[in-house]
Amino acid sequence: MDRLRIQGGHPLKGTVRIGGAKNATLPLMSACLLTDQPLILDNVPNLADIHTLSRLLESLGVTTHHDDHSLTLTAQKTLNTRADYDLVRKMRASILVLGPLVSRHGQAEVSLPGGCAIGTRPVDLHIKGLEALGATIELKEGYIYAHARNGLVGTTLSFPLVSVTGTENLMMAACLAKGQTKLLNAAKEPEVTDLAECLVKMGAKIQGIGTNTLTIEGVKDLQGCTHSVVPDRIETGTYMMAAGITKGELELTHTRLDLLPTVMGVLEKVGLQFEPTSNGVRVRVNPSVSHLKSVGVTTEPFPGFPTDLQAQFMALMTVVQGTSTISETIFENRFMHIAELLRMGAHIQVQGSSASVTGVPHLVGAPVMATDLRASACLVLAGLAAQGETVINRVYHLDRGYESMETKLRACGAHIERIS
Ligand code: UD1
Image (cartoon, rainbow, N blue to C red; front, side):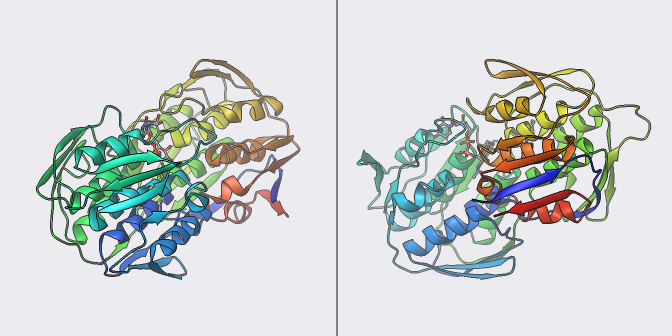
């Protein structure tokens, strides 16, 4: 198992190219199941999760062709409709094949994704939504058995809570349903919007894109298309915070500022300065502030502060002046990084779903353990700022969502290396 060794205390300076969003690529890839024509995706990040979904799609009868950051997916006319536990258990987002399979093939057997480090994460909303669209669903032996022999039928359904992959799954399913589907209280994360825009290129009829009411008029079939994946706002935000925590200066290219409205507002209050460039942003500590200061955040669905940046933001808050309250409202167990930050000298107190973080003059390097994807990025940031050496174990979590993080950081002056 690989580890990362970091000698902290070196300000980052340089340029980082931001990749396509993992969380947009996964639903986009699943959309290939809705047509037998090729779907060509560009700006695809090279990540473990993308390879995991490629393998799952191949097992269903999809031909995949990777070429650098481009991916061509061609689903056969008739597919295998069983998504096996062995592949699904590796990544919860595998549930995204359920909607397209039932919608185009009238049936699917998809393993229930297991638990994961950040909570129980049920898939009941995906299942109830498909039932509302007319599918018959049975749960047995750890699998979801879904049938809709005569196809799905459009309906109006309202999500009791905002679900990103739930919205994506049902939007894909509704594209080939008979009649109109209205999804109320739908997620409007940029990755949902990116999927909707790709589906429209494929011939889907979707209105309300970018809002929380999506209206989908079912069509008979969809075609292939070429689509470039939206930039990764979580990777962008992580490098913004890396610039802040090391008091460095980074230019982030191939990204878009409209993807992080709340995050940038919060980081400006902390004391960072952003200067838009032709295809991205330059970020540094605002020269007019004497020190970075604490700001409280509460995680919320888009456009609120994303849960996927909560851990990295907490790392930043451990070394700024003052006390900040960070509240997690999306997942019930997303504070696993705190125990590791405490080992590096952070001052954090947890009360229920809120953490009170009091900045210390500096963190101290220590051996730590990554527990999930975003917690790993949090520890990398902490290690970059800490005095001395930090060794992060279980880096495979990081590889699920950050392409070549240590290479990108090293090019900007970080002392970081991967140890096998
Ligand atoms: C997606 C993202 C993940 C991000 C999360 C929230 C992908 C591949 N992953 O995950 O990185 O952290 O959105 O922005 O895009 N819930 C239910 N029942 C369901 C579905 C969800 O109770 O059927 C709950 C979840 O437990 C959670 C909340 O709804 O508390 C939001 O989860 P959801 O938006 O569905 O997260 P994912 O789509 O799994």
